[in-house]
Length: 381
Picture 1 (cartoon, rainbow, N blue to C red):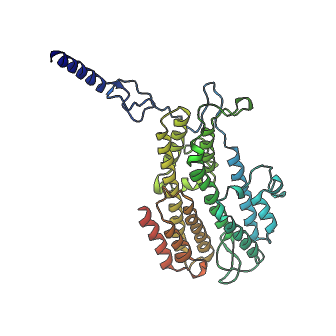
Picture 2 (cartoon, rainbow, N blue to C red):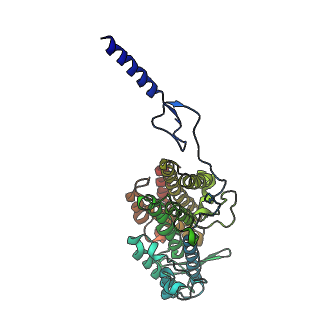
């Protein structure tokens, strides 16, 4: 009986000792231990750079997203061509060649050569939608010399700006540009590159150091998502040269404080990957970027709706221009991943096809207020 008692006492001391195992108990630390019950001061935390700049242990740059820059350049030049329809008819063949990047230079319509294209990265089920927009823009440009009115395609001017509208009042150049920002840039970053297929990959060795590829596959995929954001590596300290989404992020910063949140999340997620942190830190950054990216699209749509409202019945050129931009940013919301998207597809469909509809000349103040209130309610603006 005494022997049994001694064994029990020894076992109890061993149990207590195991319960008091020391280690890092901070879940934000790289070496967080689920077994540790007592903090021992050994925690190691992420080292965050002040900008989006990462190197390997020997100082080689590991950041690369040149393909994304090329696609940003392609959309920029495609948009420039689309807007030239205010002064001369457009060639649908040229537009299609730029979208497909035929012959590696858009059949000579790009000022540079590239192996990338816009079409193969566009949200697949909406490729035909954008091709129909190309056709509408081309048709409208045939009436560039006409004054736009209900049922009549043509141009309208305000101040030093001239816009081309379809017979339904839509400015297809804006709808195409902003729409492709969603169908390509947003969708590729948030759904594709931040998706499990692209994130659950090699992060233990560089892809090919002999060829200058010093990044791991996971690092590279994260960089490619960042490339679609279009920001300089020291954003928001630097706001020169903002492109597409980063430009609108900066425009909405006063409304939803998105600049630092977006950039910090991009940097934190990449640092977690590079420094071998718990990937829960990476996934938290993905969640943050998805949520804020959706909010900035919705906030920009609201801003344009309010601008359109202020010009309703006063300046048709501004009204239709701003309504077209609002429409496009609402369209972008469908490209946010379903698992984090706040707005429902039904609400997006209601806004685009019922509240605003396909005839902008018939949109009323009530319609504009309904759309604004829907976004306010959905996002608690």
